[in-house]
Length: 226
Length: 113
Image 1 (cartoon, rainbow over the protein chains, first blue to last red):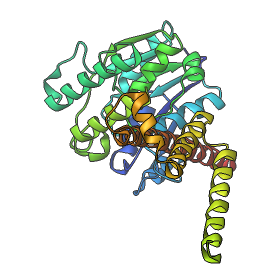
Image 2 (cartoon, rainbow over the protein chains, first blue to last red):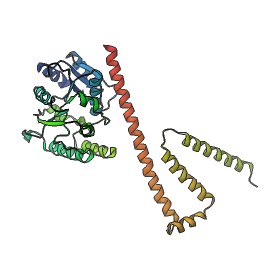
Image 3 (spheres, rainbow over the protein chains, first blue to last red):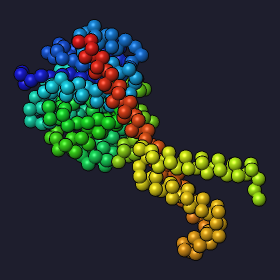
Image 4 (cartoon, rainbow over the protein chains, first blue to last red):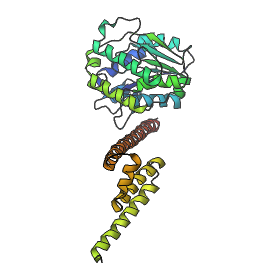
């Protein structure tokens, strides 16, 4: 693990309030290569990320979380990173758990941080539990692989996964598409339980793609792609 | 004997139709199967315009009361195909915009370094 080139990638959109603290916490856990892909935020996300010495790529126009994650994977591929950790920029994932996921990446191509296994779900809003389960079910019907938490944004990809996973969805459907890519490219994966920190900021974002209306649109887009 | 204005407008219409078909046929963005489908439909409509008695042949062949029903179903089916083709085209354009967006972001970063 020590000799491996590791990149921590975060898609970010209007995260100026929290991004500084998130980067700081990741650095405290011993990771130096942090990439923030700012999806054309209207606030100072890029500026704050740069101040905290992260590598910043800024999309000239807003394309969505899927497009930003695609940019992270493309960057990791071009810069020849061995491992890529995808983590949300809103602070809902604990950087302390990165090492736990990385440990499993020796045996699996993709390690998914699951909010739905082995953890107390009482903190998760019921609407999110339903949406996550619905998302996993739709993902299974569309892509043929069942993952308990298919919508998790906390993942580790090894070199093989970085080179093979192609994201074509721009919005939140990319989470399901990654599962589809795992199936298509015959990659191995494992779900590891993680804890999620629900803050007012992470719950309050309308653009987070997790409202019922957005989820419905997501399902339609997934079905239209078949 | 048709007057000059009638001949002029008929001539203009023929030129416009030929120009439209030429452009449609030579377009590289439209799949071959769509070209055949739409030119077939428009040719059929043009043929029926000049020879309306062909409607009764269609009615006999398809064993239906009115050939107009057949054309209504055909029109609805064509609309679905057009919507599908437009959706596909928009999806492709979105994909291209995202790729361009990504390349600009990656190149800007390279420039700064």
